[in-house]
Length: 382
Ligand SMILES: NC(=O)c1ccc[n+]([C@@H]2O[C@H](COP(=O)([O-])OP(=O)(O)OC[C@H]3O[C@@H](n4cnc5c(N)ncnc54)[C@H](O)[C@@H]3O)[C@@H](O)[C@H]2O)c1
Image 1: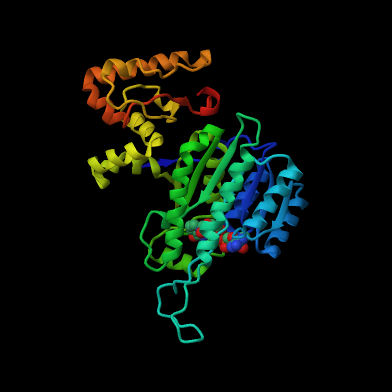
Image 2: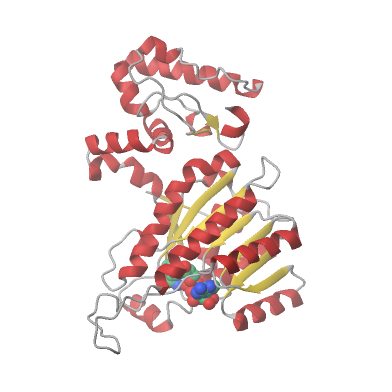
């Protein structure tokens, strides 16, 4: 697990960029404020028109470029219209934050009755907003970012929670939704770089906002648990969105401290999931895991320059044919030739030291090609 130090100085260039943020209060508000202060233009959406108008007016008075839209993120039609209008007005969408969210009423599994004395149906608003809203936001974000001239793409950050990684008996649907947010991020991170898009997630702990009331904050503090400033969580979100090399990462934020958690989850999977299960699951799920494996176990010092756009070839190939795999038989720019040679040497060395089984185990299966992160995408090289 790696603690990460992030300051505003680490943020990517935001001037001239155009962002969409969910949320007019709390963390969303802090994201809007941070981005405009860094020179970006922002459209932000929220159901709460009062808070949205207040924020828009205050920031405009300071000379910032910001527009508020009253939108229900749980409505596909409203979200589609919102993104279309923003694209129309601003010409492009660079960074998107799927941040709007609601809490859990913890009534779902209680035996409540409806007016007819029947078992009442569960209230699924948490799922509508925290799951469906995130799906709609992500789908529209990817759709519009793919339209940006390559290789610019964009950045998408989903708001998870410490409830994405921990048991929350009193927040069943919230917990389900926030676990789902990380699941979605993991699925999207595999293919997003092919469109020069990076996807990440934030997983904040208690952060003083409307959702996490001052009573909750006091209770946390009395247990010795620190409470985040919304501005710290915003910093983590904007960092992930604006720096393409963070694709696939999730930053948890507790007590204003940032920790990347996805790398260590992947690195220790064989311990908590079993080596056999891990090998089989990675073989089934493909590229991203393979690259992480290589980064962790490979001996190539430069390997972290590469992203795992890998596909399978013949699993029965022997070591010598591995080294001769048609990794780069397509048109490849000269800039990559050295890296290709390094990869081939790496395959050979790995096979020499550990045998072909080691190569297979480490690479999950044989990799057909790699695309260096941020330089090439599958579209441009393969
Ligand atoms: N505050 C915390 O302790 C904490 C911890 C972990 C994760 N989070 C997550 O952070 C995100 C932001 O929450 P916050 O803490 O800033 O709370 P907040 O209540 O201050 O902000 C949430 C915003 O989402 C808006 N919203 C709710 N439903 C909406 C809908 N259907 N359409 C559009 N907007 C809608 C609300 O009006 C509000 O402005 C949420 O996803 C939340 O789950 C918060």
